[in-house]
Image 1 (cartoon, one colour):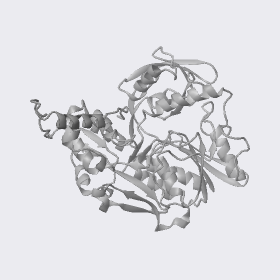
Image 2 (cartoon, rainbow, N blue to C red; image 1 turned 30 degrees about the vertical axis):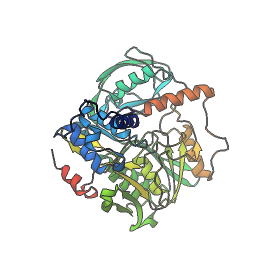
Image 3 (cartoon, rainbow, N blue to C red; image 1 turned 45 degrees about the horizontal axis):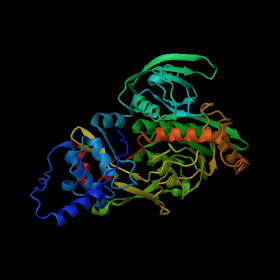
Image 4 (cartoon, rainbow, N blue to C red; image 1 turned 90 degrees about the vertical axis):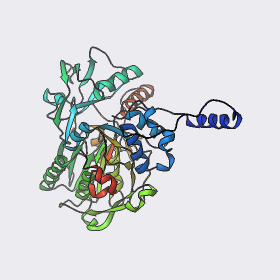
Length: 465
């Protein structure tokens, strides 16, 4: 799970220790016993973290860190991240969770939520087909009136915490009361379950003047099943004569780098060739700098685009941002959506430790123009609202409408700034803050799971079951 941020005031403790050592030499108190690492989860995890962590030189020794004084592995990851403020990302999960993800399986309600017109207007923002929510007809835009007979207010820290527990925590079922767009209500109990993940949520082709515009909503860079979905999608666009593209990544929090490579090679222009032009370079810490490796474009498919539009929000993260960064040097890239992307230019390997997998930040990526370190995210070229009153593919949905207009005219609409709803700036601020509070709890993942990309010692660990 992705842990909450905690702060450890190390400097004062060190200073106090120095004062004690210099002014109380005759104190009869004995020094604490020497810390000896043991073959257990917390110690073993930290030893591996200290070795591979991108910012390893910022971490103390295992004897000074004292992992076993942390309550569990999540607290170890919390404490480790406190030494590098840029690291909002490193996390741990159970091996069972890792295995489900690698198989393209998800275990949850199958939909997620976002505040829309106010911090009490909680809506469904996406639904996976064949999921618990999808199977009973839950649809993007449905309003949630109550969860377990509780009305949710995004301005309440307690309600945000409750919402996070319901959707991302251990709670396995909940009673929902939905309001549909026609004003009717649906009351139902939904239980979390494992289901096959469909990562392309929508695809269609639009005619804009002489343009044939492909549009698809891609929600996660999952494993082989996701790659197959992308192949089907690109073949659909090729058969439909598509010559312009809109990729909707507004809720895509990342996934496997290998899947990103596949999509980048599908979307890049033919001119990138096969093996001639750099996509990105991995940069490791000093200890593993000999593993710094460059990956090159290897164009696949018949698509030959000169420009592309991405729809994004602050929930667009990690591998989504990697795709954007990798395509910017080779084609005209425009971003449309809410404010900016999340800001995660780093990734990690799955490192097995006992019955858990740890993901300490292990590398950063640099594109062929030398661009990296986008920790503040990518700013959008045109600010639009994420219109939860309309389903994916609706040509009047704010972000899609703007993207189609740009591809047809070559310009953004004349309206200045964000296309706001008819709400006050204060209400918009509270809504944005509530959504940011939810978003901070969602894991942002950029995982390199290919053995050949891993330093040998971590490659060997993948064989341990």
